[in-house]
Amino acid sequence: MNMLLQLKEYGQSVWLDHIDRDLIHGGGLKIMVDEGEICGLTTNPAILANAMGSDAGHAREIRALLRQGHTPTAAYEKLVIPEIAAAADMLRPVYENTHRRDGYVSLQVAPAFADDTAGTIAETRRLWRTVGRENLLIKIPATEAGIPAITQLTAEGININVTLLFSQALYERAAYAYLDGLEQLIACGGNPAPVASVASFFISRLDTAVDAIISSHLNQCGWIKTYNALERESLRNLSGKVAIANAKVAYERQQAIFSGPRWDALAAQGAQKQRLLWASTGIKNPAYRDVKYIEELIGPDTVTTIPPPALAAFRDHGRVRSSLQEDIASATAPLSTLKTLRIPLDDIASRLLSGGVKQFSAAYEKLIDAIPQPLP
Image 1 (spheres, rainbow, N blue to C red):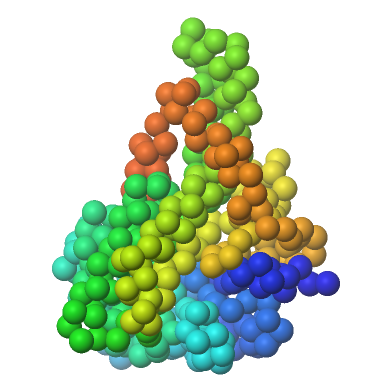
Image 2: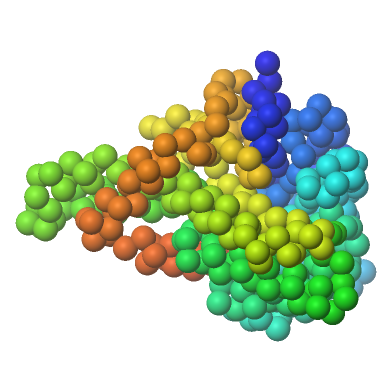
């Protein structure tokens, strides 16, 4: 049996973390949607840069747009926006059949606005109008500037994908920003029912960062004086375990935030829960099982967005069980160990957020810089 289809039985939605022209126009996306393998799609500047850079047809079209007087940024959007809209149209039946639960396509605000609240709001409004699809999610990084923008835009009825979440504290801020926005929308007489949001909690990137710190501590002689033998063994045992533990705690917090009197009042008005979306689910350490970050985070009211190689691997040999809520006390123990060993998770998460914004900025700038000039 196709193991991807079994995830639905556990209340988890599968979204594809990829887009390119062939996927949209070659029929690949439609096949996966029709067969029920995926019910949404996510993109980011790095994915779009790879898609644009690998397609010779894009280069020809961009040259033609430049000859017409478009700037490189405008030419890029002239190609990307229709593909995002086309993907949204292919997913529209899912959006309707699931009563707005799934069927979304994500498009990220340009990384240049990550530290600009007003700019993020204006750019999100523009992209929302330009794409013109109800089943669009605009991705906004969870920076200090991004959090108030999320509240304002939710209050305007715009769907938001809060991205680059690594810490519990920042996840809670993102969740409450969504609730604040819904309350403001209702207070102004708006209908919250069509408004959707996901909180993209990153997985493998966190393990990669923590594993590097663990390796550094164990391989530097100076750290022998800092850690005793038992602590060094605890360090070794932490490798590859922190990200899953961190995600499970976030899920517990999500369950608590979206319950009780405050949420009940919003739900009574038709509001949708903001679901956690597991992002960065591809394996970066070849020593780990290739579907580790999919198998260990299966649970209800969640989304997992999966890049094509991991999707193919899970389809082939994934194992499905209700893993997200398994033995929470033992599963989250690595976070306590991390604290005992004086490794500051919040600092790591903060650096990953900043680094993620820089990485997306670099990908976006590389894409724009690589746009070919029109031939004479």
